[in-house]
Amino acid sequence: MVQNMQNEIEHGTKKSILDVARELFNRFGYEKTSMNDIAKRSHKAKGSLYYNFKGKMDIFKALVEQEYADIKEKLIESCQFTEDPPITKDKVVKYLQIRMELIDKAPMIRQTIMAQYYETGHEIITVAEDIRKDFDQWEWQLFYDICNTGKKYEVLTSDIQPNAFADMLQMLLKALEILFFAKDEYEKSKSTYESMILFLLNK
Image (cartoon, rainbow, N blue to C red):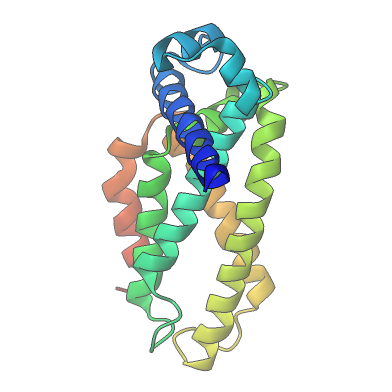
């Protein structure tokens, strides 16, 4: 009982710190936010921050991990690739639309995309790349499975190779992330992107 209460307190403290850090990182950026700022805004002693996290980078890492986990969960729930029929063009269109919308609403991920494009060598890039690898592997496998299932149900033609399909689609999306989020063109390009998806999928 006591241990459960202690765990709940620690979980609540971590959540409070992360919520405040998210707000500050989003408003001022990673560089201009300090551990003192986070401690002051969250009404926590600085020692409490270091008890729960190794430092500012560890807090940022936890936020990026949380955003990617949320994106994966929402994509799986929204697109329902496991339901019958397991794949349709409508589901693929929905995935491609929702994916970019979710990244647009993920401020920590957007900061890592900007850092990768504009600030080679920035300390958040290494952390972001490690976390991104897990998401990329998950998404690549999803595209690979979509291709195989699409061929099986004749949604896609038999000459499409799953490896190439997954590689090309993922590279295209990551390149578009630079345009949309590093160059801040998502809102201006959103309708064109969605029309392009419909055109390419013959919708």
